[in-house]
Length: 386
Image (cartoon, rainbow, N blue to C red):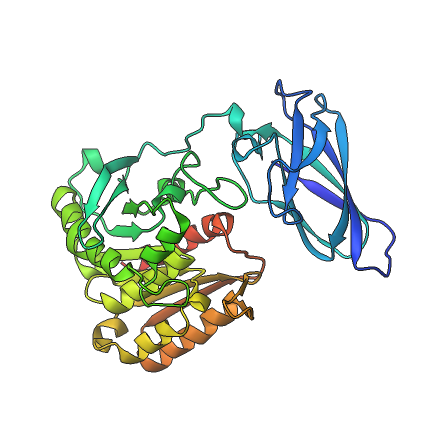
């Protein structure tokens, strides 16, 4: 495991500081002498911009000095040039960034315990299969890869299972397909359910590889950046085509009570809409870090104008947000995720009154590392409800 300790030096009345990092090689690998780099929130997470130097021999150290660091959160990782060569734990696992709060010139001690590329690229559980490499979503008129997680006893039992539909399928199970601003971190959905005492089927739909197309397909209502969104077609394809296919070909519990959806960011906003627009299909919704600030008030209007409030009242909504998820709106104003969640759940409570659960991680930021930590809590909450 990557660990570090801080030793704050003298404090100065200044706005920019110097961070000195001593990096010790605890990895028993053959990468001694190779060039390695530091990346973090101080260089926009560019993995091959700041050279540390040659990777030292085992039990030896190398020092790097970062100048002109702003006060506040300081996050960093080490690479050997790209995201495939991130520093890892001794078992090859990727973790969140090393971090500390900078308020003065600071010295840090860090260790590199392994390198990710020394281990198998795929972290996929044997329980995950490709349902279809190009499943046709007719209302959206696209073909998308769809993965399915089946419980360990699926092949040897006759049981039926609840089903969780999820977006951004590339990022849920496997580091080999995951992409992220700070590296290919995955949600570990498969490992979470493998370790749980509860069973479920998970259906994961791949997002469009183009970022703008992904957002276009995840927004429901028009906004300044996406005037012609296709989210309604995407949800209709799940409800009218994908779900019937899954229920026909797998041993599911197809009723509303046992059908859920979960997503994050714009996918969290989309999941919120799925609950409001299809209350007879989904009983439980996992809405993680929803991009409400980009929706320009449309979700609040939808809450006020939905027709089937009686069915929505019987639903349950699980909201997760991070205390450090400040986001910039299109008008350049700053919003805080946990504040947005509190405001919108207040509207939901006041106008419809479904079951609402809110989980706020004070240190949480916007990204897969934090959703990986949030998912097990959501999963157990969902299972207890069924």
